[in-house]
Every structure is written in structure tokens, then in C-alpha cells.
Amino acid sequence: MAYVHLVERRARFWLVGHDRYRNLVEQPEAAPAWVQRLDLERGERLLGVYTNVPDRIGRDFAVSTTILYLQSGDQVERLRYLDMVSFDGTTDGYHGENKRRLDRILIQMTDGRTMVVPVVGRSEDGLHRDAWSVYNFLLRAARESREGRVY
Image 1 (cartoon, rainbow, N blue to C red):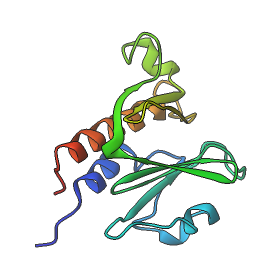
Image 2 (image 1 turned 60 degrees about the vertical axis):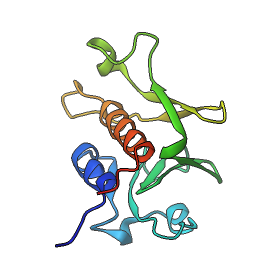
Image 3 (image 1 turned 30 degrees about the horizontal axis):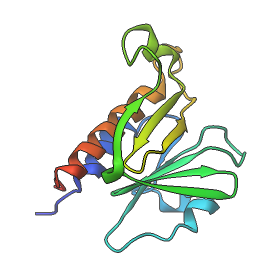
């Protein structure tokens, strides 16, 4: 029986299907140049990449089984799920109308930094922001990493 990493299952559920997300498990050749240059850790597997503004170097991100890679121009921040303490996107949290306006996620890290992850995509009807799905993915990936849950 082949086991699928729990974070990979979360990415499939929460991220695959969004227009701006590319599933690199099924299409590794779709990785942009900055993702191809990532130095992955032993046992780490690249899962996908989210492009905020197509054909522009900006604030895109890639997800792996253990790390969120946040691109900012030529720089790439490595944010371990294990080091993510809390998440927020609006002053009122993720309820009702706020889910429709959400365009970024704030991540509080164990070292005290607050990282901003922009997520600008939305459904065709404009009612559902991609940020809500990314928020749910990160929330679960961080919790399960802290709990040591892998499969």
C-alpha cells in the first residue's frame, strides 16, 4: 500500500483546482525557474506553486511537504509549517463577508516575525477568494506538523 503524505492530501483538497495553483506532483515540468532552483531538504517533496500575477516575478509561493516558500523578487523565504504559530487575514477574522475580501494571510512565526502571504485569486463568480483555501491548507499543515502527523 502506497502512503500519501498528509500535507500532500491537504494540498490536493484545498489547493488543486484553483486557476492560479499548479500541481507539481502531477506536472513537475510546470515549475517556474525560481521553484526549480529551490534546495529541498532530504525527504521533502515539492507539491505545487501559486502564481499571484502570471508572467511577473513577484510574491508567489510554493508549497512542499514541510515548507512554504514565499518569493519576493529574487529572494525566497523558507517558512516551515512547524514554525507557524497563528494565522490571520483581516481584523475581524475569517467570517462571512471577510472571506470574500480576503487577499492575504498573515502568519505569525515562532521567531516573532509576521509574514505576509498575498493570495489574490478568486473564483469565476467572484464570491470565493483563493486565500480562504490557502488559509485552511496552512492551518492544517502547521497543526499536523506540530503534532508529528505525517500519513
